[in-house]
Amino acid sequence: MSTLYTLPDEALEERFLAGTGPGGQNVNKVATACQLRVDVAALGLPADAERRLKALAGSRLTLDGAIILLARNYRTREANREDARTRLLDMIEAALKRPVYRVKTKPSRAAQARRADSKTQRGTVKKMRGKVRLD
Image (cartoon, rainbow, N blue to C red; front, side):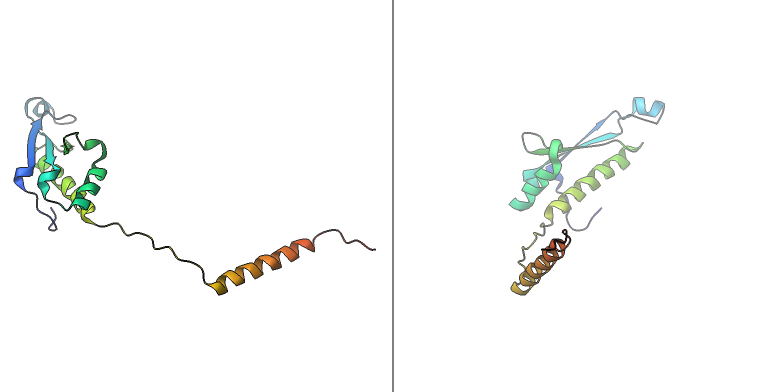
């Protein structure tokens, strides 16, 4: 778990479903898969971070503004719960980071002049490749 952000319990809703995959009889009788439903508005994030979180959620975002994460990689309920919460925290921390925008730069006048000169030189070299005509 991370230390940058703690999840408020009132924003989370956990359900446990029948898991899939290996586990034998245990998979059939014990609900180990964890479905974590998170109300984004109740997380108390800044507006821009909330917008980035919704974009990161993609298809996991419902129409009422909740994110649903399904964790079923592990055989135990506790491990799947931990996995879902960790994945949610990773998403939240990614949303809290402001994207670094590229600052446009313009070449200096001297650099533009050097470029123009080299283009002119290259053009002259290419012109000299033509057939030599004796007049």
